Length: 180
Image (tube, rainbow, N blue to C red; front, side, top):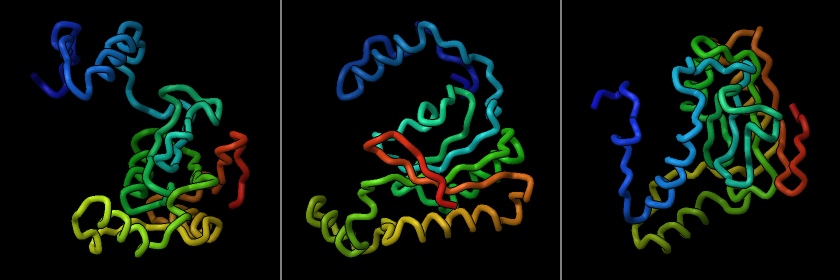
């Protein structure tokens, strides 16, 4: 099957079993009224969001956006990593991004432990040496957010015409507050 050929009802795995069966069933239901076939992938609202992978965050709905409106990059802690910067540059030049929001959140697990503590926990839980693995913990969210926004604003391929802001999302109230 070509990577660009869309799946049809007959080419989708209709008899899935195992650990992903419930998700594939839900996907078939989702696809029944799917309306984005042929969509060009441009961020309709001109927005890119860098946020945490935390499942309490619904990046589109928290901003009143819908599918197709924004580019979303998620990682532990919602940090602006080299991969996030790569995505943002592509978003600005190829996908219509004109506003970038960096949005970590309250009660983030990445703020609860030191790098060493996380390595020790993962070593214990996995039974494998995790001393080499980086987890990029966040000692001070506000300082990290300021650094991340500065990294985006100073990137040579992200122009001054792109608005960049730093926000904190409260997982208990659903509200965002702009800090940078």
